[in-house]
Length: 604
Figure (tube, rainbow, N blue to C red):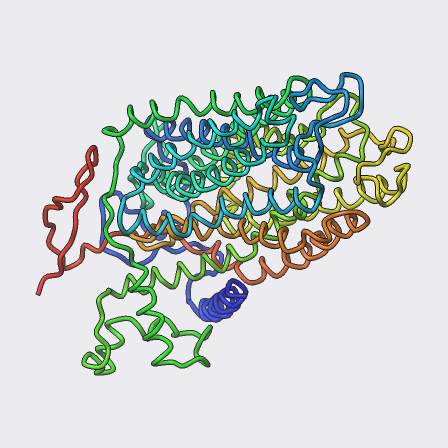
């Protein structure tokens, strides 16, 4: 409910600001750079409107961080798809004892045999923790530890989890059912490790991109262009997201391992993929641009919000001028300096406004995830009703990653540069809207497949409930399921990649880890919904488990674009450390291996 309220506040405030922009004497189709101090290479308004925009060059260190993300995601996604079968299905009769079924059968791998509801609850709670815990660890990195240190701790926790999973794949433990304890301990330890790692790695990557303002650049051809921070962010995050999904594709190897060899190999592969992580972090520790923790800006955010509410009241929420009430210049003009003690600048209040606007955008992301992956474990249950012909049922979900691997370079070096050459600004809101629409289309695909799976299954609407009549499956190839998975994967490129840039650029400097975590928390909300719906994510309700989110996705896509479309007319601006009327002082608390970052004290 808090997310919904935030979205309503932001939407109303955004709408008011958009209405005001209509009265600006300049054309509303142009992007305008905010008024700020001059800097070398700053383009004029005419140059902003006419020159072609290009991404800046990326430092080698940025690509290495992307490799670190690959190793972590490969070890994470190597395990995540296995959880459902391990918990849901029993140890296959006639199998090899390691969890793999007999060759030539339509059976799937299994271990605990705890059923669909328990399996759904475990998979959803695991993923929910992995995406909710970043709220804690993102704040902790901003305020106390710094990003790099918490990433390292997360990697240590990851290692412990992977060792325990190897234990859970032991043949004797599987036979007597005692693999349950090490498996569940490992799964939830893995969620904590992901919670430490995930909110900090994307801000760390963007910290390495030092040019955060539009600048004039002359190419070797003599063409004058604008080096655009939005385009640079888009390019580096497309590389980042590409590596995430190359890592995610490692789930193919683990899926075939559980099907044909057993759990011991399926859990060993993620451990092997994890092993380069400590070495890479050790190599990079003195080569990164690292900002020491500066204390979180969160208390000041609440103070700003409190001043706005005290001066404007609830009725002012969402109206033009709501955030102006907390600006020191506004307070001084009203003669209220004695009443309201400010510890921030006008620009900080503007950053807070932009942050609330960004978090409002994130409120729409759960529906994209539900249509991308299905409600709860519904997509996995659908896969068990289809003819596999020797293909592991959970390998098909990897078409999500495969579609991203194939499409990301096309967007990065084909579509987006072509649009920039044509002078077409395909902004973050337009891209996110495209992604929401694609995910809705994927949700429709799941719905149709499940409808026909029920219709053709020998067990009818109970086809995913360990059906033993005839072949036990509908006469539909499991490869059809690759289509909605692939559409959902492509939708992620249009939704999640711009979201990383929004989370970083719109957040106050000392809240970037936390705002990145809020972006991730939108996925946790989707898992919370899946967890709450565990009792109905089962036969005979699966068709509506897909159809309901698809309908909601279509409606919310339209609402999203109407609410936030004005943001594409704004120039991308990165929040900066306050330097106006400030004196740099030495920071003696920098972590080992960090480049000293300036800390500022206000001049009296």
